[in-house]
Image (tube, rainbow, N blue to C red; front, top):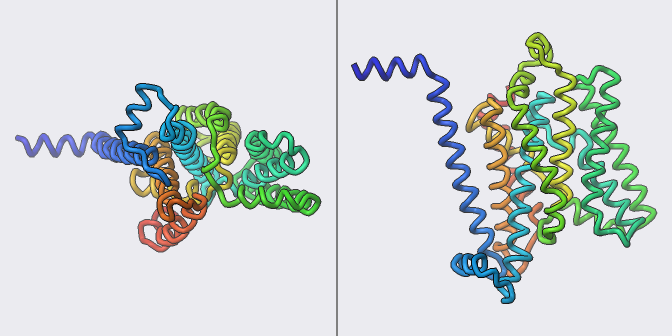
Length: 348
């Protein structure tokens, strides 16, 4: 009797069994993120015991040296790493689905080039307003995607048209960036920091600016997760099911740009998060975006946090930019994913 009941459950409710497994994976990933968040608050050139952190939070006493390190360095840096990883990973997941290409990342549709150009222009020609560099990076990312979308719309906004328009716009904006650097050589220093990616100088002001856009972007993607599942079936199938593919694709592209631009405004061009972690999430949980998006967000945040922790402790008391750590870890891991049988299955 028990055997038949178990068999009946498995054959009749396969999605329910799969969902339980997916929920377990999500909870495990969330526990990892929480653990890394606590570790991020504690470790660095100066270690802060967790008991001291709890005391600082409850007493609100930040007059001590450890209190100031916690409030002005560790806390904003930890929050920025979580927001950056979440935004880049969600953005990458959306782009890979919308463009039907697991190799897609925010850079392919001109986000990086647009953000870099606007940031360099601000620093080079408006040095007194250099504090607006983060806002300029965000505006540049959104500007690039709008241009790409307008160009692609002329040919029906197909996936190929978007990619080709992105490549063209990215090349054009990069050329303008090189012109600015040629005219104002001092701007090259800022561009190098921007290209490497670094979270060490993030302040609560930067976070306050980027936070609303990241939240709106994440909520938009979560709300449209079912439509993304339909869009992943292909344009013809999605249209036959009544989905307005061009409209949904446009909303998702702008949302992906908003997320990536907000992340770039915090830490510069931090690489590999939006490329690798969406694919890892697919391997772990499948292609149902109702589960894939939350897992991508959690794993992206965890990966960014882990790399930032390593950037602080490997050569303490000296630090290296988090972008370097991500490249050292991300590049070999991505090569492994490409060569593995599971990875090939995802590409196919």
